[in-house]
Image (cartoon, rainbow, N blue to C red; front, side, top):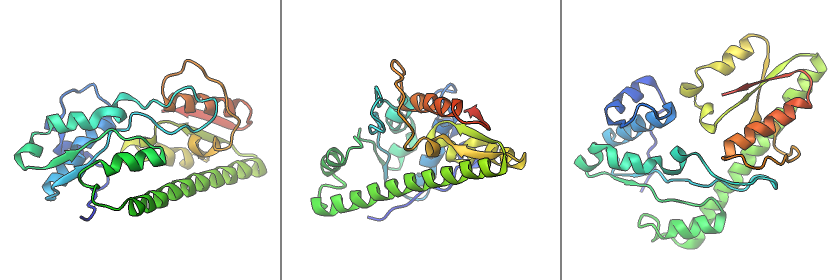
Length: 232
């Protein structure tokens, strides 16, 4: 098989999936996913792989839980049952619940029909490349965060931490807020970048990986002059 991707999120794409959304109370990124699925169906894709990820990886020592929000954890199941065109066109939406630890992920993938004929060594090789790329991405984030912090200090300027959910990297979701901030003369930092390697904080009783990350961002902010915070 070969991989087909949906296009970048847009309001037009959102509109194409609007009549399949069962509830208006769900978040905008979840609503966008309906448009992405409809676009793939219209492209003639016969199998859509959209796994449910209930738990994130353990990112730091004092992290009390690894829960994702219910939408990330199970929304593909809702899409599977509410997008009627999937059944009308004979399209399979494959949405297993997958772990993110290397060995457990490999075991789970090899149990799926679409991957079961791939040799384990080949699957693990692909996963290894993916994990290395994720590590490189985090290293790039950390390096850029350090560069911006150094620039702020050297030039006596101010910056703002835009702390939010991972989907806020999508321009359709963040509504151009980073551009508005930089246009005002402030530097923009991602909480994901500046917190890599930052001292762990014990934040017991907090539900969800994202909320813990926001609190850690606040802890970093309290000890850093010249930074403001915006929580999305």
